Image 1: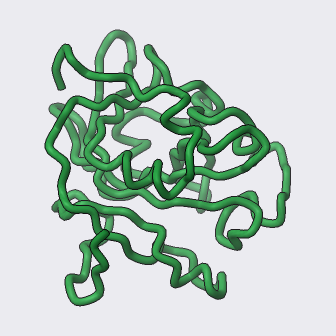
Image 2 (image 1 turned 60 degrees about the vertical axis):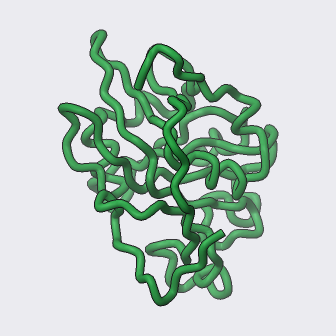
Length: 194
């Protein structure tokens, strides 16, 4: 990271979710706590495509207190608790009323940041919990910047942990770059580069 970092604003997130997911790779997620910047480079994300996506929390257009943030403005954090033990971080995409999001699955951790090879590890390493649910992705709390790092080749695979969702189980909606920090390694024989 350097002084030339460009903040990704609401307009970045107010686009097609799959495009946002791809474009997030190699950007930097920053969490500021008590004046300290914790950060990691995004290397694995998944797109969730709203009411028609059986694996999305907003499937069928279901609005609940948990999913309400997804129906709001783009460029906000959607943080939820899962399996009774992990917080997960998503970025709300598209225009308000179109409940779509990108799940952060893995980061290459910056200095002093623990392992980030899974959604629960990301939130634990960066101190992210329900208190950040619904916050705009702007400084000082939680935000994403483009530090001009070279772009790596993007690979697209099926999402992880969405078994039993019919055709959505096989949809290529997990976006990764080749990194040892991934939650699961990519299998070269099944890769589809885009």
